[in-house]
Figure (cartoon, one colour):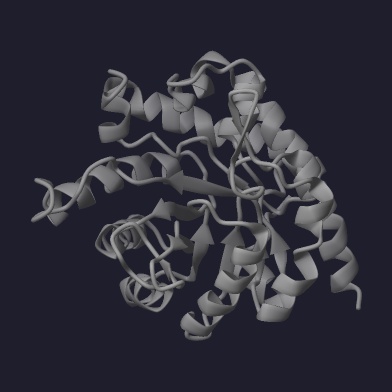
Length: 301
């Protein structure tokens, strides 16, 4: 069965991305500090089950469990020599869990350091770091790329260009934002949505937007969505909010938004012009199922 083309599908209708992976693995027994990427090898059945449940919930896009699977991120756990095995397994797990007709996104997260002059990594070195991971993901059968939870537009630009050099495939670029002192939204590096998205688009991103966020409530994400669409220069915009701002409950950090509350965001988000909607920290297949049902209903009108 031929898989749908992401950009062609986007021109036809808004689509649903999946939700959190880390919180789902923790619910399955992963401990704090344990490298989630290793679960692709040690517990493939669990990773596949998460993907399967998101697909059954109606998600068009499934994100590989490779958020921390560059060699620099893996080196923090002495796993850099397993980069190829881990990324291969992650793509295979997403495909097995989601089926042949799911669109598998090769997930690329921050490399874990800073570019010069703040840090010691050069753009050339960073391009090599991203290229190594992306080549494995492309060879393994990923359909598109999502470069996510970024704070530095320079890092995003390097990652986007690396992805486009590896293959002619769709590239999504998303940032994490927080409220700034002036009441607006900025990345950790101080970039506004307009500046951040402009640099991603200039680098060649096909879809731009935001995922995650620091202490943002659901209403904050709705406000951010409007700014992202305005800054997107006509490019498709993706938003993947957390399930509300985390709260401490019995000594545990939890994201309190219910599936129903997340679903209530769908119609307002569509009105802003957002084209891909998903979830991030704290979201689950039940959240995405409720969100997908509203999205499907909105498509019919």
